Amino acid sequence: MDWGMKNRLAQLIQPDGHCLFLPIDHGYFQGPTHKLEKPGETIKPLLPYCDALFVTRGVLRAAIDPTSTKPIILRVSGGTSMVGEDLAHEGITTSMGEAIRLNASAVGISIFVGSKYEHDSLLNLSKLVNEGEEYGIPVMAVTAVGKELEKRDARYLALSCRIAAELGARVVKTYWCENFEKVVNGCPVPVVMAGGPKVDTEREVFEFVHDGMQKGAIGVNLGRNIWQHDCPVAMIKALRAIIHENATVKEAQQIFDAESGEKK
Ligand code: 5RP
Image (cartoon, rainbow, N blue to C red):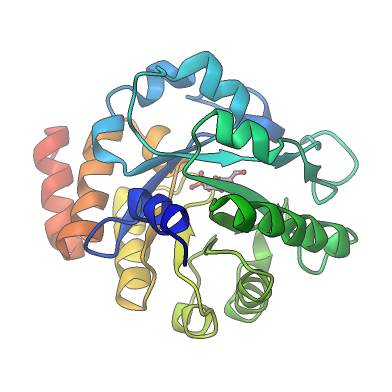
């Protein structure tokens, strides 16, 4: 691996081998997602606790202070919307030149295995990897499920993650699921977990993140269950403890309770 690629990955994955990425890219197909109407304000108190931001170029330029040194994973796929025909019909929206101009540490793209647009999305990933490797920019593949959240099972996610790795993704983002070890064990590159739509209790989040870490994930790329929570700083601090300090679910809950001033 060349120096540039190694250096960028080291900006994202911390010396303990783990990472907490904060995604705020949801608007690229969801529009002004709840609590992300003003992304700059939402993430301000969270920035010190994340290792990188996952963001489109539009929000990066509009809402992130360019003097910030927080590493950026640039979302470079899109072209669809919640109200359009098919969320899977994404293309590459942002050039590698733009990623370099924006000093991105990595680029991220969704793939839609099993969809009508599987072939296009996988070739898009391959093209991006070809360009990324040329310039030393790692590609994070996002195993997207569109509106079909029920696809989040080990068989499907293991298939998607493995294909993403085979095509050259340096990191794969997927969902936690039952038997998550099958997903991680079949994927030869690091796996990070997304959170999905907001769940009812913070404990559920701590439980699946803890389980995923025990089963080999290197961290999370987790958004809504942090920034849509009423106590987002307490959430990110508790998750950070699981990811970087090997905290148990109970310890994470204690951190959350102390920070949020609540006793659950
Ligand atoms: C949205 C994404 C998000 O980055 C990903 O889903 C993680 O966010 P969340 O934890 O809110 O699901 O790819 O397009």
